[in-house]
Image (cartoon, rainbow, N blue to C red; front, side):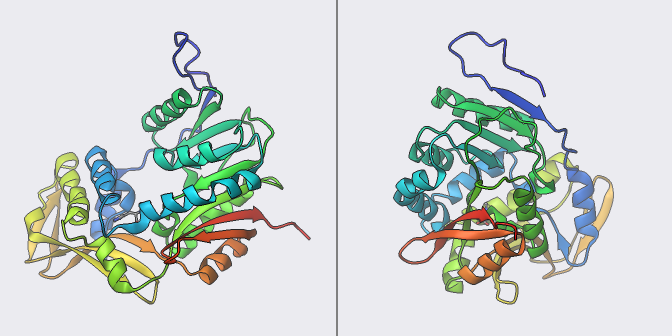
Amino acid sequence: MHDRVSGRPNGHAALAFFDDQHPPAGDFLADVLDGFSRQPKQLAPVYFYDAAGSAIFDEITQLPEYYVTRTELAILDRIGPELATLAGPGAVVIEPGSGSSVKIRKLLDSLSDPASYVGLDISGSHLEAACLEIAAAYPELQVGAICADFTQGLDLSHLPLEDGRRVIFFPGSTVGNFEPEGARQLLAGFRQAMRPGDAVLIGTDRVKDPARLIAAYDDAQGVTARFNLNLIHRINRELDGTIDPDGLSHRAVWNADQSRIEMHLVADQAQEFNVAGRTFQLREGESIHTENSHKFTQESFTSLAESVGFNVRSTWSDDADLFSLHWLEPTAKA
Ligand code: AVJ
């Protein structure tokens, strides 16, 4: 750990600490070659979020069909006083996948005198920028950063944090991007890092009318299609790819058995393409599976949380039951 900002001039925001746990950099090329070698072909959704993809995702959050972000924000607004009571004064807020700045500000504004904010992200530059913004906006807050892969567990043991209740904030239904076993491992990693009295505030999108779900992932303006295809443009640009994006169509399908929306790119006609000198073929109608977005019921999420040692203390939803936020506490050990 080092204090990378102690030399900043007075009046500029500074981080209290920057703990670099040296996460192995995700290997875009190896993952793409591996994904295209599988049957069915697949790509990992983490690679959606280059600068262009992140900007398109921001557009998605504004779409009339994409109820997710605005519904979660409205719930956060409504439950602020309850969150303040549950967290108590002097809370330490920890955000894996730091960057949802609107949501984290709502949470920090709701709490009474939060002591610290700790961002956690695999990308050090993104993380530092996000945390410095929080530090600038909240001069009273101790702001730190941990550069780590939070899917591999959280190491919070040696951080110079205040002794308040630690609240891990994981909004957006990001947990839905993981397959059930991955989601369990992720939550188990959070659980392991927690002490009695600590809590998780997590958002989950709910099972609902498939037509509504499909519309949210296949919007009329084609923004989600552009988001999906941006991954192909990124491969072509960064990995010397020759995929014809005009020959691929965006599809969003509801997989009822797995309780998830799947995004695919389907080949309109056969094409052969290269990535970094390797050749692949797509048959007409063949799909590249690019994302899973799992949807939960109260029962399915409760059983997931309980299976890794959490008690669901509270759940809040909007009136139409589109989305939920849950307050999880470690189950007292017998
Ligand atoms: C950021 C994973 C929560 O699954 O709703 C939005 C990503 N993909 N539209 C989601 C996404 C297509 C989003 N998450």
